[in-house]
Image (tube, rainbow, N blue to C red; front, side):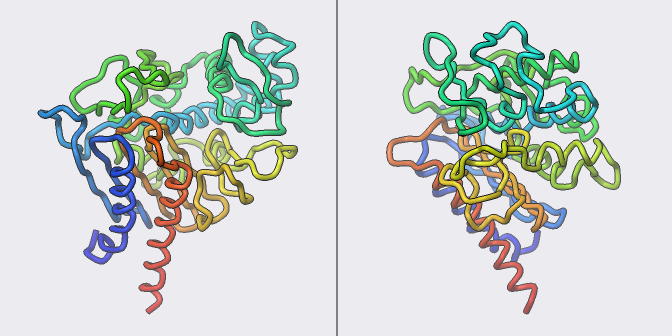
Length: 345
């Protein structure tokens, strides 16, 4: 990267540092790819708040929380593309006959992929909050059902699909689900010692919240999607598979004001009060955000991938995570626009 590029994307780095000051974390990373090149990359802080902690560096692997859903979306697209799932409008009960039919009636795979299933499992037993397709809610019960359907139909776990079709062909050795952590994994910094929402997992199937990825691997994952599966002239997976995962699939009856999704990716479409994508980010861009603050933004129109990573957990008092992540995307766009003005001189 040249000096001008570094200076241009310094504002994105400053945004990351500003967020780092607001959340409870010990380190962060920022990485931007534009026009097939890494144009900015920075690592700050340490992997934990322990005195002898390892410094954050290129091979540090962050807990990505809900960013894992973009990988699950790929596995779902794999199942659809290869015919294991015939149609995303198939009912969940067709694949999981063991669930309560009266509760899951009319709920489809599309509803699971777009957070519009209307169910919650927070409480003594699962319950329905609204009819499927009409409203949007971020609830884990849908993701559990989706990963079960993927495994049941393909005979493979989400992790197996990703390792075989993406991680191994592209030599992405710093991405995975871990039962045991090593020296390159960050500690997730909790606001309170007994944080009830923090539930570590030892599953390596790709169905739980224990995925760790380095900043470079996460950016490369975004770049892989940006390039529609074609890397260095080699089509790693079919183009149509990536298009399935990253294009809009929200139900037509979804009310205005709610976010729109592809296969779990947030897709920029109509204005939404609850979207995590900045208003200046162009239509057709897609993004994923995790509870640890980790964010991956892909802007196809500008050939840009932007990543920010933290080892925080949740939102401290006074921190508006939606406003913060929206402004991250808007800051990326302002940096791109600055480059365009310079190029036109």
